[in-house]
Amino acid sequence: MRNKEELLQFENQIKSGDVAHCRSNGILGRAIRLFTRSHINHTAMFIEIWGKIFVIESQKNGTNLKPFQEWVKKYNYTYEISRPLEFTAETKERAMQKIGTTGYDFRSLFLVQPIYQITGIWIGKSEKKADKKLYCSEFVGWVYQLENWWKNSPQQVYEIMQQSDFFNFV
Image 1 (cartoon, rainbow, N blue to C red):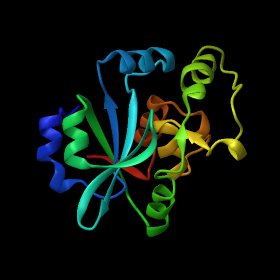
Image 2 (image 1 turned 180 degrees about the vertical axis):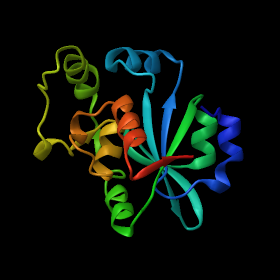
Image 3 (image 1 turned 120 degrees about the vertical axis):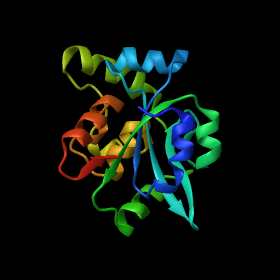
């Protein structure tokens, strides 16, 4: 995993559509890892706009766009990056349409996801209702239309991308 200094040095190699699989050691990060049985506690997506790299992510204030440098400096994450083999204009548009319009899905992350991890039973929303509020890995899964995206924890998105023929880790 890269630390934030390494990620800042890697900025010129980041491409639109790259996905950051993040780990932090703060209280919230540890709680998410505990509740979702993960070693990854956050998922975000990089996107190039006007020749600059930004981050689209779902955090407690919803799905928003942030400048790359500010995002990296703000959070004390370690990172692994996965890259789609193909990133289309349609995929970029899909990601951008959630910016500022989608709230954060606290209920699914802290109640539904832990129950699902422990029991294997999904008591949460269905796919048809799932894109109104999103937590981080739901957002990335939704953008890339991963199977059962509304059920995936950050760890599950990481594993899906690791095993996929459509993503490489860089």
